[in-house]
Image 1: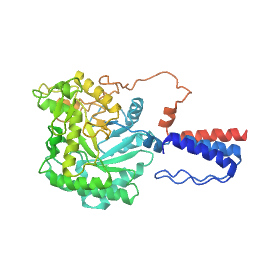
Image 2 (image 1 turned 45 degrees about the vertical axis):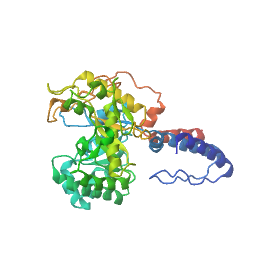
Image 3 (image 1 turned 45 degrees about the horizontal axis):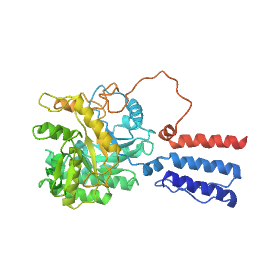
Image 4 (image 1 turned 90 degrees about the vertical axis):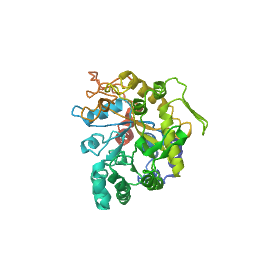
Length: 431
């Protein structure tokens, strides 16, 4: 329930319990157990109820239901010069980034994020799909080792089964994607984690046959036979459709016919979709609505689209049009402003746009053109690549303040602070 409603509800019970004596069972929240409290005299009862009030206000469950996130980042690590995961947690907290995706289930990373409150989607790499698709026991072993053993302290909220499989060149992986996803979900279900950890699979724009104008978008004929049963499965689970949407790549491949301002969220004429009678002033929203249009035609009009990757390279090869610091800064700054509005697209105005930016760091070991190694918002030393409103890892000699803000309390975990609160309360009672 929302924090303010919970607060009013609990205050009402405080005053009622001081008169009636016995305390009823309370606070059945998601996967937690009901809380039962013994009856004490009015003073100690008041402080115990005060403990519950603060627990609800600062609990992760309350925050999850009262705040809609829109901005996340991809934490890729194909590099040999990145900061330690513990420093990355500090960096993300300073930037107030609470949602990330990683491309594997690295135990060092998952351990470092323990107690951080940052929600993570982990990846089941493409090379594991065949093995996981063979039997549920293999999926169970993987989930137990890489998910269950870190919950609940590390907030793993999703498993991305493969990355950009459909539409790719390895056809044999197309055939094992759905069985692998089903086995992963089956393992989660048997462990009672199906409501905690989402199962999904991100796609590239290569799954579409046509995406201009947005309303004309459809899945490729060769992809559709694999995509539809996968969508049917994810629809049953309530999982969204994840798409990697890059206006940068579209512009790089056709700079003669695409207005750079349209790709960068800057003033431009935009495009008009005659079928839907909708106007688009930026390519990002057009790409998202193209995905919605394809889902509509496939029979999945209620499925939400989330952008699993988007970004702009700050450097590239001579033939990579638009890859420079100025454009990267403009794109990422304007994207952040758009997501902060927490609004939908022209075609789906009630579906709040959510996106994970690619990427957190430049990755110096990534193969391919120069642009692949230069998508990072931050440099390997933790400093910003360019200014989009974030601060980097800046050492400070200043002593820590004894004053703790509400945001810091919520970020450091409600159990620790609730324990401190109730301990203080009991000290007052004893005095």
